[in-house]
Image (cartoon, rainbow, N blue to C red; front, side):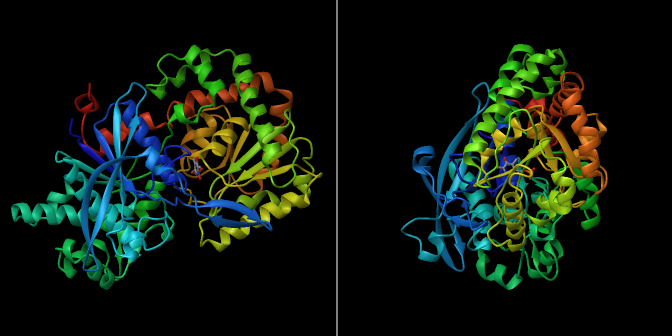
Length: 549
Ligand SMILES: *Cc1c(COP(=O)(O)O)cnc(C)c1O
């Protein structure tokens, strides 16, 4: 059956064996594809085959050290014996196509195509284009993804694609290829024909997240696909440099941000475009702990097929929910006590606060160390777990990580703070299900959405967050947890509101909050709800009409 929609993403994170993701963007892409499969949406996906992954992290002298993260791609992907050609810098570069099949909860399959330039017949400089995620020549990677991706779909026979969904600007060159394709076929060079087919999702308000390239570099590298004269292209993609976000936006008939707040910020950044918002979600079956899944199976009919059924969490008896959480927590504590590098010794009955995500300045991982006196006053009442990677060239982020590790070691015996190396999907699963509280302290308004907190709440781990991204919406819908309304609130909220509730009212008030988290937040911040919004608002189809039998 030919697919109607194609989803392009520079990273896709499906599981821990396939190292083609770095963080939130890739995990979201993976969770989106899984929900599309559960809902039997005729979609295929395109990404790059990074044989050396993103990187493996070790901590040496409290500082991040990186090494290659190779994986068994030959065992996991299928060689479909097809390739396409993309001209880069005047040379024809061969791009090989591999396939992976992601199955939904009742067996429907979404194919994902991985593009690979690591072929003997390519020149050395081209063999390494797709080697590593976000390293090497970014422009060439984006040419392979966008232009090579469209050609790959044609080569495979996917010629009924109605909508091309760009997950971030990395794939925006697909618009130029669609423009060339349509123009050469019909001799109609109206940009409108491309616009009808494209959807664009932007994921960050941070300028560094929006790639820009010099026009002379663009014209040198992709002569064959730039059928727009420079004046036209600059009008669409920015006058001084080619901004991939603007290129994607100019060629899209639907543009969206990933939370309501992010939508407002994006409108301010790009006032010339119409911006919608579709708030992110997570794939609950991927992120709910086994003990929690067992409980859902017992009390919530149909939750795997449609996460919105989690509204019925209120039918679960309190003691069974607490018991399921305890199982996840004990398992995590045993793991953390074995593996942490800061010498922390965590206890099973202590309020456990988790913080695991990319170490980048705006996420402020080191916020708890701003008042050490207040922090150590909480000895015995709280314990912390940190984990996360910094992007290879992010010196500031690595500095913050170093500070967190150093302080955690210094405070040994005063307060327990664990750091785990090499944050990945498996560690994420343990922490978001085993912690009692999930901390989120970005500088506003930089957290476009955030998704680790969504993974936490569906396990009954409460969200303790600043008012940014998805958290604003979650607190508005009485979705459990504790907002941090201003900076001074952090220690006060912890000491006077959270700690008493945890230790004095655990078996009634705390479990009540857990149910609000699962029932109100979990039933909404999932990719089943999100994907349906994409289909109706962005792809402009009725779900019932496009669903495959
Ligand atoms: C969910 C997830 C992220 C993204 O978390 P944020 O809260 O959005 O920063 C990053 N890395 C991994 C491994 C994840 O599972």
